[in-house]
Image (tube, rainbow, N blue to C red; front, side, top):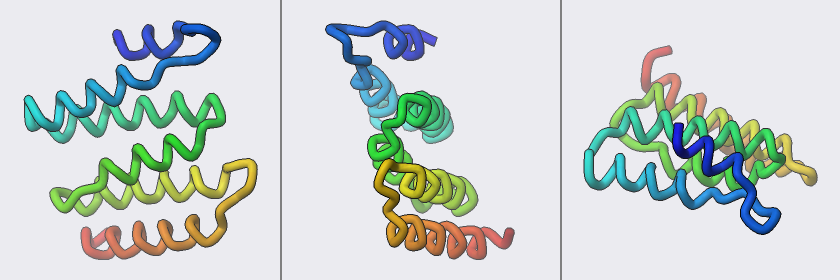
Length: 111
C-alpha cells in the first residue's frame, strides 16, 4: 500500500519507482518470500505499463523469473512479451522470443 502511495506522488514531476525495487529486494533477500516479491513486482509492472513505461516493466518481469515455479515464470515471461509488443517502437523479435520461452515454460509445467 505504501508503495502505491509513494509511486502516485510525483517528486519534481517524476514518479519514483525505486521504492518498489527496494521492497522487492527486501522480500527476496531478507524474507526469502518469492510470492510476496512477485506480487509486488506484478503491481509495479502494472503501474509502469499504465504510464507507458513498457521497457522498465518488461525488465522487472524478466528479473522475477526463476526456476522455482515453471507456471509462475511462464506467466511473467508472457507479460514481459506483451510489454515488448506494446512499446512505441514494437520489438517484435523480443516479443516472439519471450512468447516462445513462455510456451516452453508452460509445457514444462504441463499446462
